[in-house]
Structure formats: C-alpha cells, structure tokens
Length: 98
Image (cartoon, rainbow, N blue to C red; front, side, top):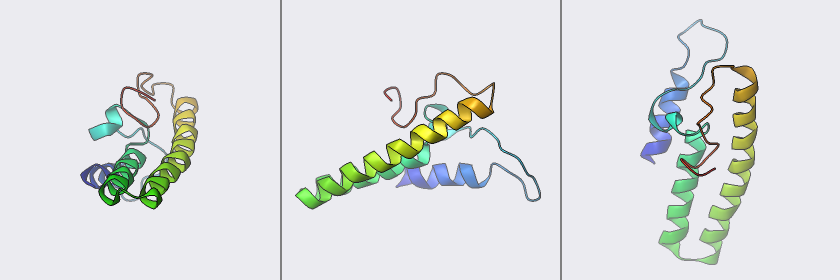
C-alpha cells in the first residue's frame, strides 16, 4: 500500500496550482517504471490473493494484473511519444522486467 500512496503523491504533485501541461513523473518507483501506481495496486492484490489463499483471491489478482498491465502499456507508449527525453530504461509495470 505504501507504493501506491507514494506514487499517487508524486502524481498529485507534478503540477503546481494553475500550471497546465504534462510532466514526466520522477522519484520513487517512477525511476524504474512508467506506472508505479499500477505496480503498487498489483502488489496489493497479489498480497490479498496470497493472504486469502483462494481461487477467488488469485483470480482477482490475475484480473487486476491483466487490466492494469494493458493500461500501463498505453501510458508507457504515450510517455515515449510525448517526451523526447523520457527515460528509455524505464519499464512498463514491473521494475527490471516488463
């Protein structure tokens, strides 16, 4: 949950009041992935699936991963197209993997 809270804090503070436009998120897990907030969500639901040790919990974790991975891919592609200086080493959703 801390990953999610920290990532959301970074996203909320990208712009100052009255500012417009887009910026590249920096700090925390955003140094490694384009969708650190989604990564936090996936970790939370995987933890839930393990804690419940049930088919339903595992299915929900898998469903969450599939949905958020698709969205993360779209975000990652958008960042690459929008910002010439976007870090090429950043992964989409899972640090150092994908």
